[in-house]
Picture 1 (cartoon, rainbow, N blue to C red):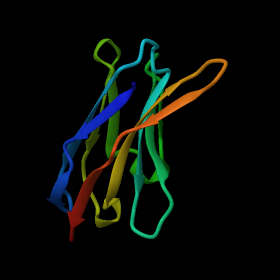
Picture 2 (picture 1 turned 90 degrees about the horizontal axis):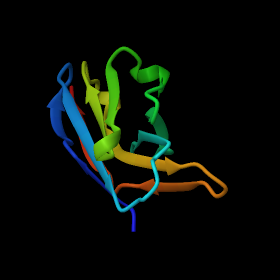
Picture 3 (picture 1 turned 120 degrees about the horizontal axis):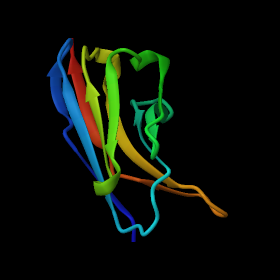
Picture 4 (picture 1 turned 30 degrees about the vertical axis):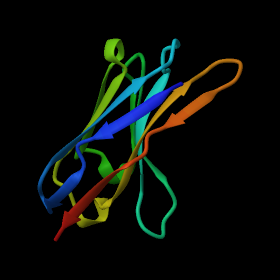
Amino acid sequence: QVRLVESGGGLVQAGGSLRLSCEASGSIFVFNVMGWYRQAPGKQRELVATITSGGSTNYADSVKGRFTISRTNAKNTVDLQMNSLKPEDTAVYYCSAVVLGGVTQAYWGQGTQVTVSS
């Protein structure tokens, strides 16, 4: 059974930094894509950043230049370094992992709260 466990959320002042980490376990396959999504109250879940097993990255425009995603394939971990945080970054952040194949399999973590105070 695949399990994703996030850590690193919390409360920070605007302009501060946080680092989120996610460890995936239970899969015999390589996660082709790992990433972070977020959901603010009253809003839909949105993409923050993704990274492929080859290291290609994709960022939402709102976080480009401030957030950096990285992963360690051997450990099935993905991290999100968040700098210059803004109050609008406040949300529950979810880790995701995808296995591509005949049937695409997507997995989610339980979420970690990030709150940025002004």
